[in-house]
Image 1 (cartoon, rainbow, N blue to C red):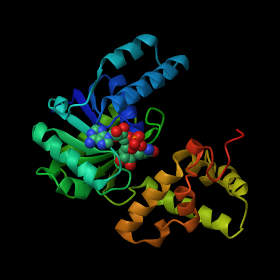
Image 2 (image 1 turned 90 degrees about the vertical axis):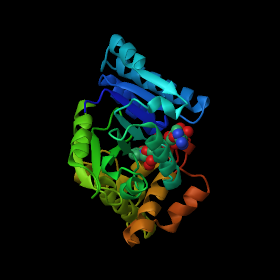
Image 3 (image 1 turned 180 degrees about the vertical axis):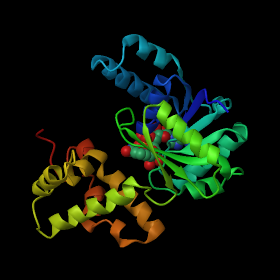
Image 4 (image 1 turned 135 degrees about the horizontal axis):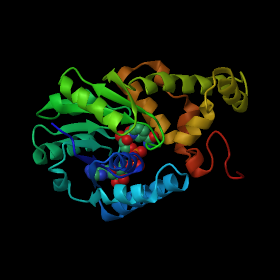
Length: 285
Ligand SMILES: NC(=O)c1ccc[n+]([C@@H]2O[C@H](COP(=O)([O-])OP(=O)(O)OC[C@H]3O[C@@H](n4cnc5c(N)ncnc54)[C@H](O)[C@@H]3O)[C@@H](O)[C@H]2O)c1
């Protein structure tokens, strides 16, 4: 089946990025939100992001206009009925994802490929809640979607090979490098990255070194573009904490259990760059 039209459910940070890169790659895109105000916000994020690309000389004004014209925003799930692939990017809650997939099953034909962009939930559990689990896969993009080069393509034990192949081909079409990974909490990147970041917090807590020096050590010693504290602040400590907890709940592996200090920071609203304070203080910056 040729994929011409992509559906995206959720036009938040990730959904708007997925809609943007799909439209830039020449796909027609329908992006659905729960309410008009969220849709407006998501679409204006795409307008700003594509304008930045023009300003930086990464695309032309004509390409931007053509890409924006390919995106249709909607608040009705029925508008996804003629998409060949639908990518879900709603909030990270299993019940919400299952609800979305149940609605999609009622709207889309049985051959439509259904994907989730979840970071930490089980693709197997989402797929198992549907009547056709063989057409469900994970497409895990990274933030910011237009910039980050990787796409993790997640396969369950129930999936058809051609669905995985379609995911890989879609990744290449939208300009990403792909890796194929079995469905397992955190997939490749977060399974490695999250325990590493928590070790950094524990090193700092026991006074091994300052957080500035831990960041500096990882940047200069391993050529990482950002140290762990800078990266956690960048991503948002709430997102980081929830991702760790989701994997911990699933695996009971203590490597994913966040130190208490992270929980306290989240509870007190110190969420990183977005609130002006996380591990570092951004108020003066
Ligand atoms: N933020 C990241 O760095 C990142 C990276 C990779 C994957 N993810 C995953 O992507 C997904 C989305 O994350 P995000 O950061 O974009 O969140 P977000 O909160 O920015 O966006 C979620 C959007 O989904 C909308 N939504 C909720 N329920 C909906 C429904 N039933 N129908 C349509 N829209 C609905 C919300 O209104 C919101 O705008 C999550 O599963 C998250 O784990 C996030």
